[in-house]
Amino acid sequence: MRKSQYRINCESLYLYRISKISYSKNTIFLIFIVLFLYLPLSVYSQSKTTYTPLNVGEHWSRKTVAEGNNTNRIYYKPKRFSYMILDTESAQTIQIRAISTHKVKTIEIKIKIDNEIKTYTLKVNEDNKNIFFTEPINIALPSDTKTISIYTRNPHVFFRHYKVNTRFLEPKVYTMKPINFKNIYMLNSNNSKSEYHSAISETDLVYTIEEDGDIHFFIRSIRTNRHEVPVEIYVNDNLFDTIYIKNSTSSDYTVEEMQVSTGRRINVPNQKKGNKLMIRPKTTDEIICRMFLSTKDLY
Image 1 (cartoon, rainbow, N blue to C red):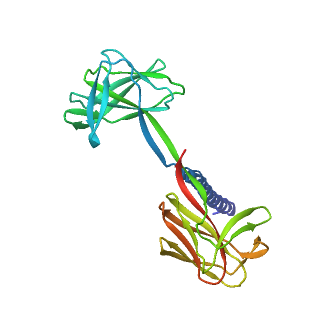
Image 2 (image 1 turned 30 degrees about the vertical axis):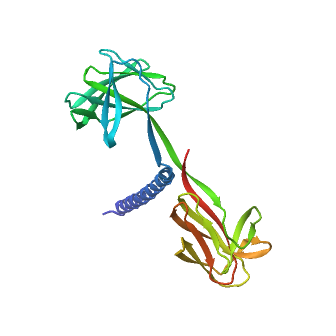
Image 3 (image 1 turned 90 degrees about the vertical axis):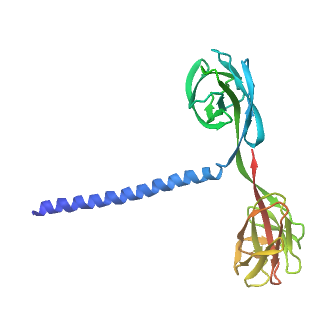
């Protein structure tokens, strides 16, 4: 092989390896971006869905049907060869459920929205005392849709219609106040002031949890002695954990011109309303704490 050919082959191999490395880095970067975007969505993806029956216009008849949990619901039959009008004001998504009093495998329906007609095929998935239930379908509506119309050629079909209400669960964080403590201090820095409550070995820091949720708190020791401080955490008088506040001094925070240790964040998850949380230092040091309750409230 000539030297020039050898050089070209070496350069080609080098460029190939570089491209593979670059591809690998780009792939990792893309994966990181996807995870970065997905994780916040997963945190806020929890939701609660409820269903509100829609008002129905003129119809041929109605039928009371027994559903699960001994619940009776009314289903409506459209007039023959006519569309039945549904009141969808303020609805963004609706759900349609259908039954047939005769055995069928599918039910074909037509939905008219703003003079546009779409056909849907509903699959029967349940037979209860010769009442044949279809799988429900959800239909997203254009904004400000006041009414829609529904129609089927099958004379044995009845409908029930709902407005779908989805409310997302958003964590909300509350600052907790103790029912027992030694002192109240202001933790100071150049940019902020925060209220902390203290405890000593003879005076526990005690909280009553007012709602279900997750607890987290920030804890420090006031630096009168230079050693590690063990602290016990109790839930309902049972030892939950023993933590240690390190022998290190914060360069950013003080309490009434006294030095404090660097802070620690402690998590106490899945707490129930009414639980008692107690914090007790095991030395003569005074510790300070600021506690938060994170709940999931509807908005």
